[in-house]
Image (cartoon, rainbow, N blue to C red):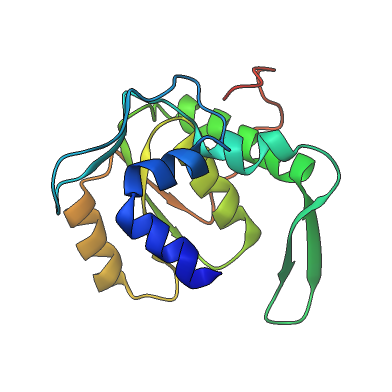
Length: 170
């Protein structure tokens, strides 16, 4: 089965990926699934989606989105509803800091659930993130920030506001 799927993706990439992408939510449908030549392909030209909507919102409910286990063995479970609430709160925080579509944000945090929430919040508002896990030293952080040229840098001390503005499409 794998070989057949792989073969289809190589022989008819536009058809194959159009079929896969049609399973996702698109705010605006694409006019062309694939344009250009390698290595400068452009995928889903003209299409608009929000990947966090596809990853979280459309699965809303109390089903488990992920389970996090700390290095000390502490277990935390997050439903899709929990994740959406956290993502919206961080999106509101970022907007209040002036972060918007097209901005670059460097995130320097440990491997904790809040890292996932803030990365999804950044994507949700249309910004781009550069992640430096806090296990890396300050030199790695300085190099990544220089390369990305971020508008804002986030760290583990950032806290979301207590309430969102009620907008379901942060």
